[in-house]
Amino acid sequence: MKKIEILRIESLSRAPLVIEGYLFEGSDPKAPSIAIIGAMGGDTILPLYCASTMVDFFINKIEKEKIKGNVLIIPSINHYALNIGKRFWPLDNTDLNMMFPGYELGETTQRIAKKVFDAISGYTYGIILEKRSDPATCLPYIKLYKSGYEDLKAAKKFGFKILHHKKMKSIDTVTLQYNWQLWGTKAVSIMCSNDTQIDKRVASQINQAMTRFMDKSGIIDYHIFNGYESTVINRDTIEVIKAFKSGIFIAKELPGNYVTKDQIIGEVVHSLEGNVIHEFHSPCNGMITCVYSSSLIYENAVAFRVAKIG
Image (cartoon, rainbow, N blue to C red):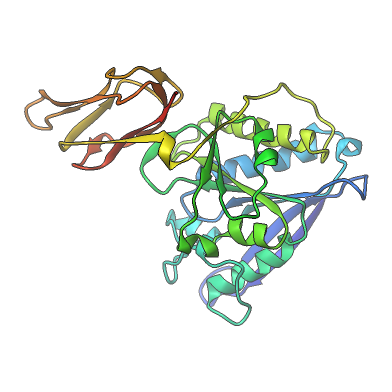
């Protein structure tokens, strides 16, 4: 294992920002390679945990000779934001994942993006561990842009239940996933819940999926159980259920649960009087993919997302 310094930025008032990667060199120069990116935001704790435990996996749990292709893991990019629990770059409140491919003479976040992008360019595959931006608990799933450069077949090797093949917006052209794909890396994002506590069960599912993908792609020789045959969904196959009333939110079903049309899946309770003022009914037969994660819900907030069956 080589610990490599990707970037160092001096600070006037605190320790320098040092971004480091962990490089595990493979034994087969013809084998595909992969880079894994962890926390790009200061509130992306599950991505940080998953990336760091993957470092532990490669150091302590897999024999060196079973690593066929090069593996680079960068657990964290935005240390300053992590230290204070702030989502974006603390100095100017910019999103690092909106700065790619970066610019070496630009603003600080553009320079960070440039250095990181240079370090991860040329890898066969790329994984970005992302956290949902909305207050939702969800199944871990693959997000793959319809960029024209994506590899849908490869993305199914992770074995997640859901693969969201997403139509791009103009703003997505500055994300890491799109630019990585544009420059020849088969990149995907693994989407995690917007939760502040570590769920080790979910983290294990994510790390097993990454291990499964690397085994199936010939990067490592480490067999584990097969996952799911991923169901590809898009915006047309997802029903979004919003709250008609504000109040205390109580979910009666969890992400991954199957529901039937008209089934009661949650309710809103009057925050002062305690009576039920709204019930959520499933609009279709399907599986719940996301549930609102806060105890207080506001009018028109998205309470549930249901992937339709049939």
